[in-house]
Image (cartoon, rainbow, N blue to C red; front, top):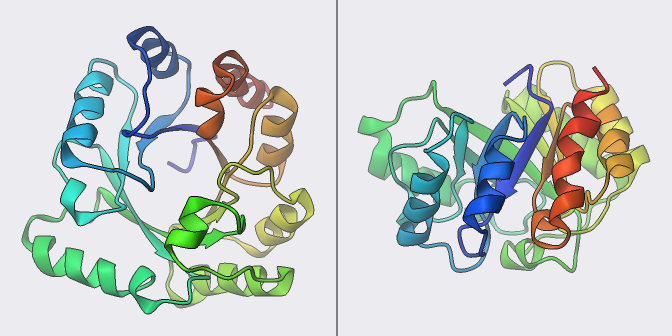
Length: 226
């Protein structure tokens, strides 16, 4: 994961054609995350997993509901929403999952993400009852992710909206061991390169469903920066 630069995120509640899925899986992206906020079901997750598994690209389940947890993924990402006003999104749901599944959990495949959701109009912001932090708050959350919780990932999530590059740069400058993921509003080559300059890994999701061809080109845009 330390060598990754680009991830596509697919929502099991949204439609993607077989031709498009093949192009995504063979695009050169480093991995595919399966995850979303609304209408995430076990059947939907299993159906998308079985389609992705025809290809060799690493496949990650981002756990948003316990009902949709299933074996078969290469990795499992567990979000902790650091700017939520409810403890359940930071601690309680994770506690329930570990209580239920601890005997079969392989911690070599599981990575906890410190999430900071920064688009107040997004579904996930409202769903998790989050609040908008200022820049210093976000930097402090990043410090907590690295130094208090020793998390492998700190995820700045703008969820459909293109974010503040200066804030992303400030956060990246503070992190040494925790990887910085950026997701939100990346729709073209310029945005992909700009955000990759200031983060370790960019995640491209919504734009696959808005302008597929442009979204697909973000892989090469990032890889050409090497």
